[in-house]
Image (spheres, rainbow, N blue to C red):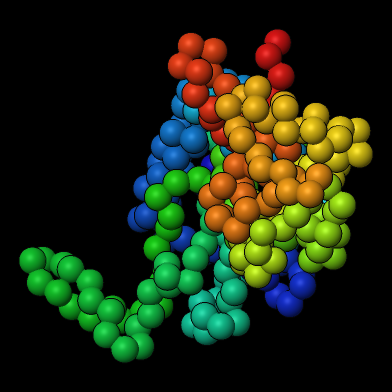
Length: 289
């Protein structure tokens, strides 16, 4: 039986599923495209790890987020069937608001294959969009859109399995699974009695997503409450990292790169190579088994 293709659209704060009508002439080719992307997505990935915002996956790993509420949007398509969904209309792109395209897997029952969708994928008949046919360029006569070259995620029961959280959150409001320090928490951290901030303006300018995530991890670990300034400085030295101390406080430098290195150390994402004796930062904080 031919598989149905769906679009997930953002209508205000609500996610809505629309059915994508497909001509029989391209149905098989579309199915083959998604099947090939599924095989590529899973190739060599034999380990699943619960995503906690602390690290990126290794080449053989998939990150997993459990979100029953969001997953129900996809699982319902198995129960409801395609007739339960309105047809996607792209004659007005501003109203379509497509965020993702998905279909059901042919190899794993209950699995959904999900691609992200970006505005640049729209093909509009207005203006001058050229198509190549019979060795000549002609004008696109109807609205359309291009598909992405890869899957963004698999949805299985209540789980989203993915490689890039950044890409997944362009489709779904899933940011609550990625915690980072708020403005108030950053200010509180900067004003901690253990620190001397070399340049407050440069510190604030360095507060990108990565820095806020590190601060969140430091706050959660309680390292500043459990260890004094000298103990922290000595432990930093043991992994080849020198942290200056001024008037009994750890110096947080204005240099963005060095600041991140110190934050990474405090968040326990810095280690010393056993053989090279060099100091490294790591995205993974998994303990050695």
